[in-house]
Image (cartoon, rainbow, N blue to C red):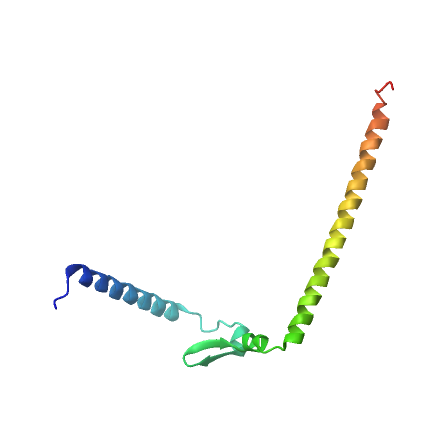
Length: 113
């Protein structure tokens, strides 16, 4: 079976796209700073040609009780922050109320009743 033009075109475009990606990656690797360093490089490993971060693996191996405790701590922290914000809003609201009454006193009450 002979290859049709549209099939050839798809295959050629795919081949050239991959070729361009490889060329761009090679250029990036050539232009890379050899002194570049990230702390993640200390804990990362390559297994079967794929990069794996050991901290990610450690996080996945935590016992369920520990994860539950951490989530509970997160919730309590959010509750505390919410209470803090509510108190701040109440204080601001009260100060606005005080300012409104002071302005009315300065203007004098225009109401007769």
